[in-house]
Length: 301
Length: 260
Image 1 (cartoon, rainbow over the protein chains, first blue to last red):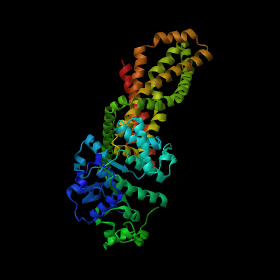
Image 2: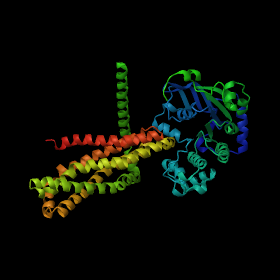
Image 3: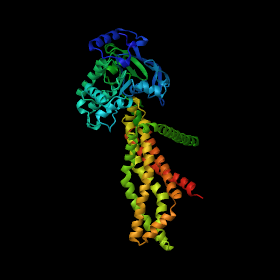
Image 4: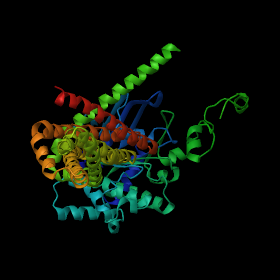
């Protein structure tokens, strides 16, 4: 299947079996061709104050895949999403989405590109003064001239896809955390985007909500022919749906491969993260002088 | 040690200048978004309601009491010169020229300005503004512009209501309680209060205060640190800065309008 020739706006939903076969093929391919790559990151460096978040990293996201970026808290996962979506500017390097250099686009160009991206924020980011229905309808009202009846049908379909059609009249403060994220997901897919970005979708979810989200992310990706980028530190859930995994730490990509490849990776960094070991290359203790030395030092509380 | 203090002072100065620059850039962005409210006037009406109509009670009650106090104090001063019949002029001129625009601006800064800052700050903290950006909706044009023009238009209307209610308060105390002649109260006010000199200048002042108060409130919210503490600090700063700038600008405008 040639993903590169697929027009995202006229994409038809694909049969799940065919998608699974394509995923298997993609895993076998050692190198992606240029047309396979939807997001290409080259030589990316980003600094926040004195701290180097990314140090000259390269990363590719293949079309149609669920690509997970994992790493410990504070490793820059959310920052990476903000760089891809043009919310932050890199200090060096280039990020291309569907062949367009994100940081060379003017505001109108960037907004045109963002209409083809959906993002699920960690908090859901629902507009608190609007109902569930109005939140999902918001991007459609802003960017299309659909008739009220068509808009209503479309919103109900999106809500049906996340199982919350019955909650359409509720306000965001009446939703549980899991429901809020599903509404945010319905809003993110309202404009039938080219790709979806998920920022820590599983954080703070109970097992049932987490199971629903895990299944939804995979199903949406396959049924709607999306490309999904998922940043998370929930190893098990993420590995269960990802085609491709990147592990980042200390400004570098320390591992890349399929979940099976990373499960077998012997490096200490990967083992500490994947197995959740409390100590290893990433220390349990924040850098400090020895406890003895600290006790000897006179100081006030 | 001396150089360290100097460097710290320089950093503070540069930081303040940078904030001032960001504030002005935001104002330009807000004003350039005026097309948004022309396309969707409903956004503007909603904000005039939020900022104007919901401030009516506090503005009306404050105006009444300020007018009553002016009636009392004015009567005792004027009575010493046998000029208590000019009470109406004194009350109306004080309200229309100064107290109406200034006190209304301070009240709006406290009630609506703080609410605007907290609302925008919380929208930032809960990623609603980033969410809009990601939906290719400019939060400055969609969220800030209607609030700004809502505040700017509501302020002169509120100041006019404050002054009108204040005059009624002064009338109630002066004529109703202290025995000033009813006809003298109104006729002297009518002949001495000049429309252009007093009323229009007062309106211009309140329009300027509307710009200042709403701009400061929106900037503080938009520029706030997106945490509970950051929004709380921004809300406090919004009221304090708005109050100080209103009083300072009032002096400048008064000197320009009535200086000679």
